[in-house]
Image 1 (cartoon, rainbow, N blue to C red):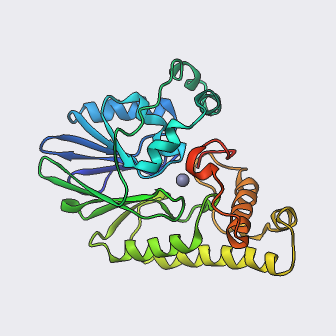
Image 2 (cartoon, rainbow, N blue to C red):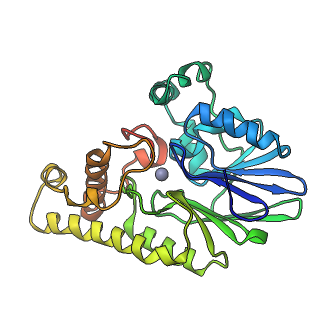
Length: 290
Ligand SMILES: [Zn+2]
């Protein structure tokens, strides 16, 4: 893993989200968890070398951030909406999909039970562990339930998927206007080291590029709406923005699908039929859980 500061470790090259942990004077706090069970088992061994895991914090409701929670024995903290979404996930469906990620995964998924958040917040929460302070702030955008996690003493913030650093941005549940607001909230934080949801570690210098891509997407779909296209026509015709960035690790080939579900979501958003009830309750609407 990459050691970012004296106490912050992150992994940005595994399939799924960027996850990490912080070593404190009173044990370890993990932020997000691996998508692949085999990666979770590896991470568990890495953490055990350094101390006892005290808490897990999840930054958002997509399965690539919480599937691995189940392999750790620690209480999970997240936005209330993350808990609701996990509890409403069809686990048979979910584990069947994750089981396709590699030959070792199905055996590890036998008897799978999610370790859903048991401590939740709506707007913000502060957690003190040893000498460290963790500040969670609700920042809807990529989904309605994103949160940033600042590790105050380390100058590091885990941004969740409100930042995709130089990899394809998924907008399949996005509220683009709230997302742009979230980027401004990130800009105002004291922390200068950004652990994005996906891609390499970055800093505030990337915020403008992330924002302009979201705006470009929104305008692109708005143009289709303005030209009178139906939802299906718009989704079928919008293909241009897929090749700006590569897909994240082990997501090759998914770009056209990401494009379609992102365009469909933005079409709904711009024409007023948004959010669908599924965003509040059902996590399995989507073909992948990014
Ligand atoms: Zn996500």
